[in-house]
Length: 342
Image (cartoon, rainbow, N blue to C red; front, top):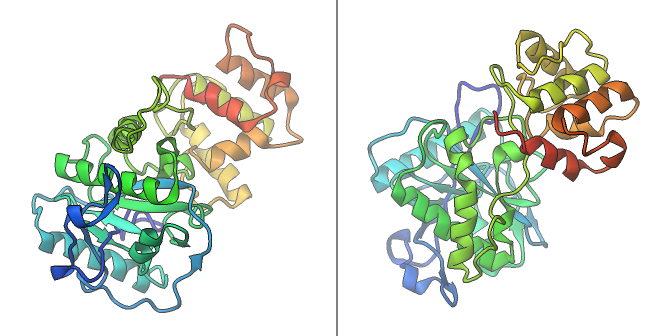
């Protein structure tokens, strides 16, 4: 997300443009990626008058393996014009280059609320069209070489994207999946990898729908239930439930014994999470437990085994799973994501 008042990069906007098309756009019929899969109309960096990057754009001779969806955390503007889309792309690039001191816009592509798709980081479009390389972005630390980052203009904590934006996102994801051989089930949200609210609760909740629709565009519908996958629950102040209680036991196992394992994400829990993040030098010291802090908590070695066992018991009150039966991170994720409460 892009928010100049935030303590870190927040979010990015990005876009696509096929070069050589009249007016910087390419008609969908001219951008076919294969039977039934077409590129949406895309606006390149030149078309929205992007600044030149300050250094060489890194391009890797490998395909990305996933797509990460973001929201910009900017106002849900009513101006859905092309001019508005270009304006926000330029503002984001200025913020990333002048305040973050990055070489260019951080994300690979951006989609405006009006449904305009723009190339974000230079070269992202041509490289995507080639289908064998990937432009390294700056949208999600630890994933920039692995994932294509797509920014969606707006804030989607309680609202979902408008239809025109959603349709372009679906079509862009389908085109990217086709070009790189990415499975639709590998479309995720920023919070899957970082301790962040991005792409917003409402948007994140409909990512299973996005995976299903992308699979349909590709002509390979997903089996029933496959669009939903285990994911790290995002816990924050006010959260309640078994996942919170498990996190509290894991924090106690790490030596933060001021935390009471009461299943409520209270002030003591927030303070303990911040201390844990500080000690582990996570990207954000914000008291949220998301896709960066969870893997650290569940894979920590040398903690109090009794507290770890209690964390497992909190997630499996029927006793069906023992701590010794949880050697892998994916099993933790599955158990944690089964708690329906945020």
